[in-house]
Length: 165
Image 1 (cartoon, one colour):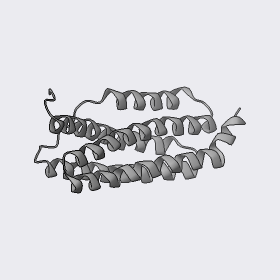
Image 2 (cartoon, rainbow, N blue to C red; image 1 turned 60 degrees about the vertical axis):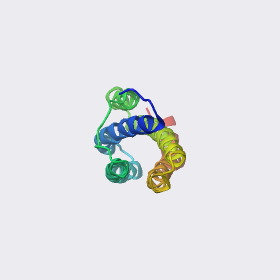
Image 3 (tube, rainbow, N blue to C red; image 1 turned 135 degrees about the horizontal axis):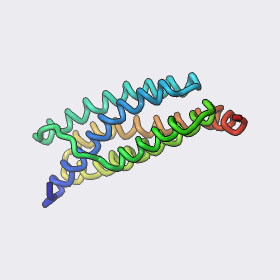
């Protein structure tokens, strides 16, 4: 769909992140199963549940702009998910795999933070403060998920990966 206005660009980006969130629900479930570190497994599992809520919020966002919830293929998130799959398939040590999974997950978080940041700014520019506030809830949760992954990595996972055989 061509963008002829900020409204169009907003709708296109909303479709992009909707696609990303739906695919991340599946990816986070797999990452939780593949994690050896119990704290990391819990973080992925809880963020999967939170991501399901993000999808629900996006459904609300589409309603707020009177548009049908639709996805638009997001090659960026597919590439990030593929990198996570590669970590799973090519890493023998559980400790190294956990470190690699954190790296892949943080790439996804940073993508989402960038997208939600843009959507929040555009919603405000379009005069829809209520929509901006809805999206900011998700933005804040994505930032917290990224911070949690950093804490887990720095607390134990990275050190364990350094000593993996």
